[in-house]
Image 1: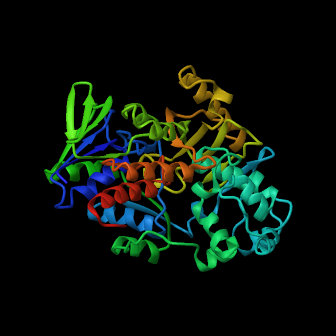
Image 2: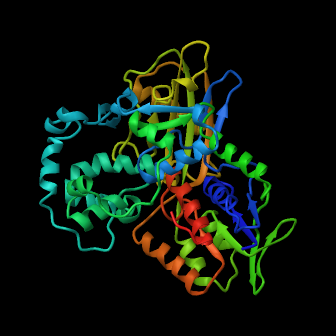
Image 3: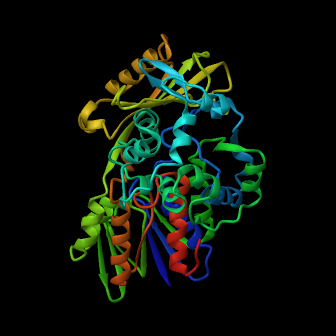
Length: 476
């Protein structure tokens, strides 16, 4: 394997390069990123006074093989001392809220929250859990998340909790999202154990083979629920980029939009605005639609499957208020679609990560998430909506939901266009079909990134690793 081109400099593409450049099998790696910066949706603002604001993911879960894998990279890059852990005993882990019927409700937690009836739910969760073991296994190859949870745990939990969860994680509609692709552990628990409860107790299928290093072991010992980095999560892609630059084996190109891909007997020709690059193999970590528009027209089957993967736009509004203004302490609150279709949730950033506050004077940082699958219905097209309108909607929501009468002393609006792929029904078949087509036609092409195997930071990193190791003949 002489030259591998990696398309897309988000965290998935960077991870693929990171694993490739550590192998003696690859002579040269070329990374092509269309924008002016690397890191994709891992994007942090570091203000001159020391405050940090996240415009994408704000915390990463350390649990399981995919979580250990990310922490192993963090340790390899020498970022251990930058870690900001949040333990399960922290108030941000124990207190998560739902905004239902115009008021905040703490999500049930602990034994009491399961045994007793806790608003906004009309009966104890224990009843739903006890009955779940007796529910028959589904017969469909795929099912919406809402349908699956309604069938196994009841419509109320699906309408309120799961609807909100899907909005918080995917900015998506639980009635359209695939349980098999979005929550594979739930689907596998039913398939392999006949029950979610038994699946969680006994395990529900294979997981990547990752050995936890010292930092990952520390996260287990200290019971971390999530973590960030002192200078924001963008520090991770920046550290990987520095590692790649210093390796001497990776060519890094920014502002390099891939216009067209041509395949011949000698390999790929990658056409850019200002020239052509040759490569023996391509790992694409581009959004599915961007890849589809660059592929040769003869790859019609692959192009169609890629175009069928839709994405949603999310408005991320960072707000800072003087003083301590929160009526409750916790991670934040989610909003079910029945309550407010446009507002997905509010994260109380200062609670889990007070280290990101400005060091001088007391302040509260919040992030309001809006739009997602409902963006156009509520706000119109992303091209026509103004930042002023999004800011006004966000501040009004904070006032209504949290009783905050003060105006923010600082704000930033980021419109993240097409940022989260939507795994609708049949997504697993689409991905399987694409990879089968690539294999059958012996195409020197690998697919990685959030469009295929998971949207979390951990999932995207492991997809970059899987693509690299599949090419090198090793496996995760």
